[in-house]
Length: 384
Image (spheres, rainbow, N blue to C red):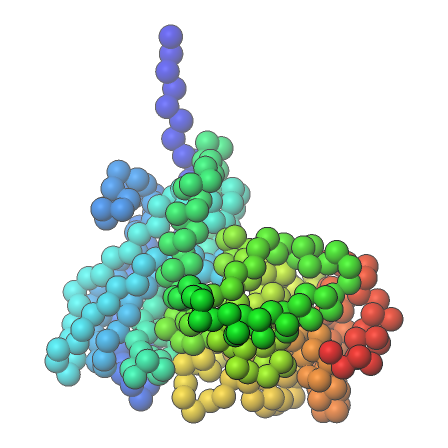
């Protein structure tokens, strides 16, 4: 009797090297000498001992500032959001400190579960952030990355429920923190639920499940990467996460947070649409516009820049929309679907925004034929 041991066929080829300097800000600075990506190698950490995967080694990190956080990510534009490692903390005891080496690991089986089988262009990225007084970004847009062609081709990689649940929880907790509701939250929950029901009922019949939404969770004190946010979403379980403390805000603000996170789910499920294609979206911006390398964190973390400031420049409904293509479309969707915001946007007479609205309506119509001209006319007439 012959016994065959099938090993994963996981091949990675170096495709492109991109080094983005870790820039100084008012809160700190950092320099990195080198980043090395080792492919299909035995992993060393306790959690992954005996597994094969990708190891990220970063050498010669010179850091200035308070309480930096270090993380590595794997990201693919088709998946949109990155697969993160656990964060590593470091207390700086001197004016500056040098770290000889720092390592992060991605098991092959987790990469395949996240990206799926087949060929992917994947960036492996090293980031440094830190939070001073809980609300300031240590180094804006600080990362260094390499891109590889990642071929994942192991037919025996399975997704047992319990393994998936543990992996999903790890990813979620690397980004979010929260508290569970108690009996004392009943009044806030009821007020929040009233706005939530209006959000739920405003869509065409049967639409709410089509974008991939699988669950809704009500909790409180949500923080994303250390910052308070009004809502969130679990991209693995496709669950909308609602913070009932937001009940203290206006109905428009509550719905905005819900719509924003709901569209993230929608876009992650329907990423193959030509209307969510990055090249097509980029063409909708004014000629010469470039997104900042720091992305959304630049506006979430800065105490001086209101991310929700409206129409900061032609083509963009909010300052947050200028952070990256991903949030640009999400923000534009919020202004399309919330009547009071839509009416303000129309008054700007911005040809770029109006074309983005048109494209988004076509995208929604791909998902549900209930998004007709008559639907939008009735929505804007209702004012809800």
